[in-house]
Amino acid sequence: MNTRQNVLFDAPGPKARARILLTNIFGIVIFLAAAFFVLKALADKGQLAPELWSPFLTSDVWQFTILPGLMNTFKAAAVAIVTSVLFGLLFGVGRLAANSTLRWICGVIVEFLRAVPVLLMMIFFYLLFGQLQIGTPADIPFYAVVVALTLYNGSVIAELVRSGVFGLPKGQREAGMAIGMTRGQSLRNIELPQALVAMLPALVSQFVVILKDSALGYIITYAELLRSLQIYGSAGPILQALTVAAVLFIIINFALSWLANWLSRFLSSRTSGKTEPLTTQPMAVKV
Amino acid sequence: MDSLSEYFQSYLTALESYDVVGAFWVNIQLAFWAALGSAVLGTVLALMRISPVPSFRWAGASYVNIFRNTPLTIIMTFCILVLVFQLQLNLSSDFDFNFFLWAVVGLTVYHAAFVCEAIRSGVNTVPLGQAEAARAIGLSFLPAARMIILPQAFRGAIAPLGNTLIALTKNTTVAAAASVPEAAGLMKTMIEFRPDVILAIFATFAAGFVLIVIPIGLLTTWLSTKLAVTR
Image (cartoon, rainbow over all chains, first blue to last red; front, side, top):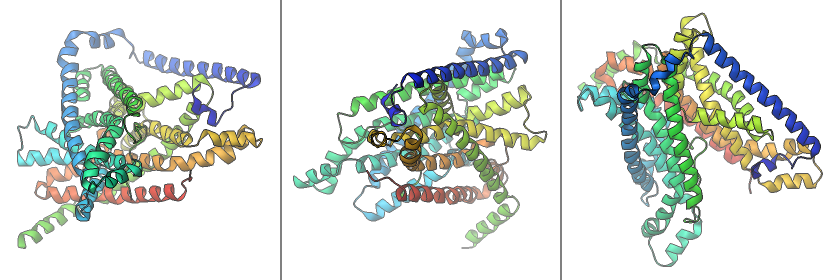
């Protein structure tokens, strides 16, 4: 039992321990029964037949369906991660600029991009690039996915940069000023390096969002993991194909979340800022 | 100047031939019902995760880890392609309403995981000293939870809950994958039929979402600062 539990619950005595044990057994029975009924319903519909699942263990399906799909997912996510970090740094520093006009413009752009759904931007850029004939028709979905992911996640990262600098103790800037640095020098040499280290865990959490949102490319026919498995499964094993897609996403995202938590512990002694991964949705509107 | 007013004219005719407000109304309805559903499911999950019963905690944590890490697009396509088309699980005999209901279910199960984490993070903002103080003045579990812990936890949860509501509102566009006639799908149709005014059409739909999302954001930010617990 971790320490947070203690806010609501005192260390249990013998009576409470007996009650917890009973509830625990009740819970196990309920969850096992629920799992049993789901599996039984699936078996009755013939969805657990081994011949529907075994193709996903063959090298053919991996070579021609899963791995190409994964590659496209990773390609879009990797490019989007790099471009959105660049976008985020640019606009995050812009929002901290001494010039109030620049600050205001960057603020409006970032707030606008965070309020518009990623899918809306993706569809727009997909059709716009098609109209302007940017890239070959085969590349257009990829460009649309990357641009839409960059604009949205870049603006979230810009917000991380800004709140990272604001989250530093005030003394950091004051110390910079005290030794004769200008505001810009203190920002570049003292505050940003610490803020960037502090925001790394939250940044890695945001990579999970980028990876998940890359699956939106399915809707604009980008041949990522979900799309390739859906095409394979449309011949019959659709439940199995989509389950495989979900499991792969869960494994990758779980690993990234674990990395974010590890980074948070590892880096906490290297900065005066707060190193916390994002466990909830990032703040969408700041006033 | 002429070309500008011409552009505006053709934009107006494009706007007149499609029901943009109706499409946004579908998004708002999706958001409303999914918000209600995920608030209920998320609260149950949060209670499970903070309970002292190991099997409840394990089940709650598994749910959150599975659904938080699955793309919403997969959940949505799973609902339609697997549950409706393959397994013939229909929530309504009406063809279109059935898709709408499944979209609400998909949005609910996905965002319930985030609601659970928002509530849990609210509980985590309460310092241990508060519980110790409550016990020290002789309050037992229920009075301590009702008068000391939960009021502070709810205040701490307002901001993350508001952000989840905003994300949910924007994510209603993913219902396009469930062929629900909502805003993103309508925008696609409109641009395909009227490619001459593509920029104006996108600006209209983007502005629509800004108009819906910004007030929610302002309200939750105002509430969370007004009700913030000073520590």
